[in-house]
Image 1 (tube, rainbow, N blue to C red):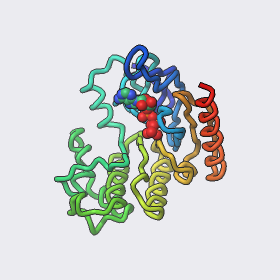
Image 2: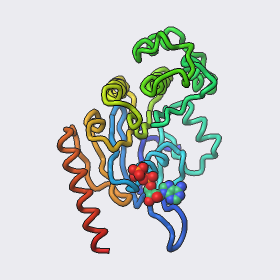
Image 3: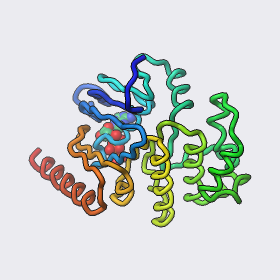
Image 4: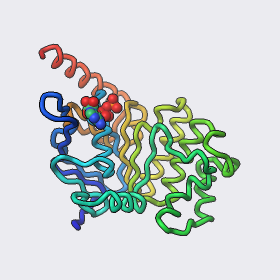
Length: 252
Ligand SMILES: Nc1ncnc2c1ncn2[C@@H]1O[C@H](COP(=O)(O)OP(=O)(O)OP(=O)(O)O)[C@@H](O)[C@H]1O
């Protein structure tokens, strides 16, 4: 087992889907570190490798070469069971599709990862978290009885409640209206300010502006890093990269 100062680290990660002529290079050698308590947005054109980066970082997908270190553990050679246990212990997910268990109510969805990890939920802390995300009146409701924004707040409460070291978010505001999206982003920002490490894939410059840093991916490589991102600067960089990609396609 190796240790690292950052809870998430990728070293020269390459990932290709398929083989030979029809093989698609999703990550072409990515090295990046996500320090503790940092909030990073990952952006780039469609197909640039954003989700693959997130999945490799979380141990949901395995790189062909290179290494991934998650909360001090080198993921290479770990069994699926070991990876699942590691994620249960240290990682939370906030996906566009919410990923809640439809048969469980709000409170049960929030406490499930803890129960699976064999931890006794701290009920007073859970009540605080539920209050913080504005769901105190909904704890006995099932996901099907909640709006999209409320369901996403359950996913965020789950991340907060478990005090996970790392939260991976993939388009967390993709299915939400503007004001609900802003609330959800504010909560993610709070998670980072409380010491969690957040890695978020997004297409939205407004969402990215809540992060400390934005990584821009093109063709499976990090081409730009932008600290303290302002909405207009992010939008301008996306437009520049989009135009460059279009030009490159025109030359092919
Ligand atoms: N399971 C898979 N099998 C084959 N190809 C895949 C698979 N997953 C991703 N790819 C390909 O790898 C490349 C990177 O995909 P990825 O989903 O990481 O991109 P992305 O930047 O997240 O895209 P989007 O913004 O459209 O979600 C794409 O060309 C995609 O078609």
